[in-house]
Image 1 (cartoon, rainbow, N blue to C red):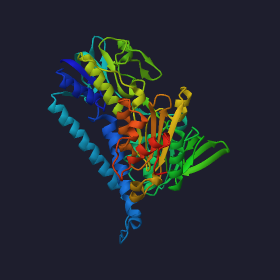
Image 2 (cartoon, rainbow, N blue to C red):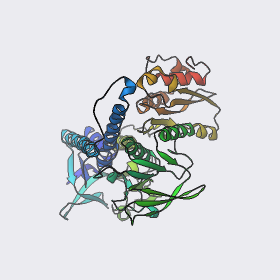
Image 3 (tube, helix red, strand yellow):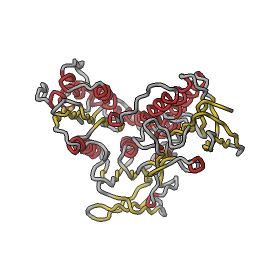
Image 4 (spheres, rainbow, N blue to C red):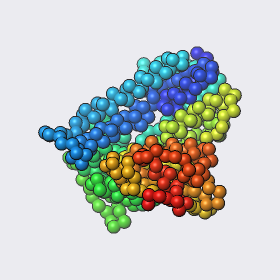
Length: 463
């Protein structure tokens, strides 16, 4: 029952940390109370992308004539089949992680884990019996869940969170989505695409509010063109679920408005899973719903670490994974480098997609930089026009003095696949002129990055 490392939680932070620990020769165990892979593989990143792909295929068929294809007969979205496919994809990915555990000789401990003093973890199994395990290093990776607010108390039937939104028994005719971050925007796009009447309510002045202002405006235009009702600077104050439909009261700048909908989806943020896992017993410090850690994810108590959504920083799967690797490599005595949180990409998988990294234009100005900003619209991209959707652009931001690449912001088809070029380039301290002189294949969406850089330096060819 003694290990070098015990990881509590098997999400993309926990399972990656465990695999890396095993690779480095550390005897490792993972405690998980539900499905291996955590929220990301089972209820987040992966199954939502499966749903979004189904919506995309349906949209392609709906617009087949635009591509010179004639489809005879009726066709319609099969909501139940879409949900079933997404669950199959998620289950397959979870089984893949279980295979990796076996391959790397990681012990899987099923049950609810609670950290105890003396570098111990108490695990309660499904039958209620408890077993105590000991390790030199304990990594807490318990993730997060949907945040609840008083005006949106979830009942799992009419007011739901993201987990229920992936497994509804039938497609609702109408839905109000509250919150326009990645989760809210993706579900708004999915349900609207297959025929649900969607209203998207956002408290802030713009949707996807952490993104560059130009990106937010473009996505709002695309949503409105797709018949999604977008309400910004608005707040849901009350939901009456007593009747057949939900009556949603929304406070706007122009006054109060009431909207009727079958379902209200709350996507107002997440809450860290740090209650009842023994932090107080061990003396581990927390602040503002997060566990306090240093740059190597060490808590204030020796031998205890925390990674992922439960620590400060972006609540993203790829961030948790990198935090887990850094944490374990430091434990193993390697020369681990702290994570540069200003070079972490963020993606939203709507249509058009959104991808960004680094400073927004507003943030760069507030930081005191003199800027060179370039922008290339996909309306000028041959590949985007040929693909049939030219909404969006690539925007790049450079420091005028030294040429440092401060940020990049994209909205358009498949831009989530383009952002990695910017992440790598920024990591290598690549300048704008080096990007301009790097040959990009034609015709591709990636050319827009080169063209945007050229626009920043008044060298753009195709504008």
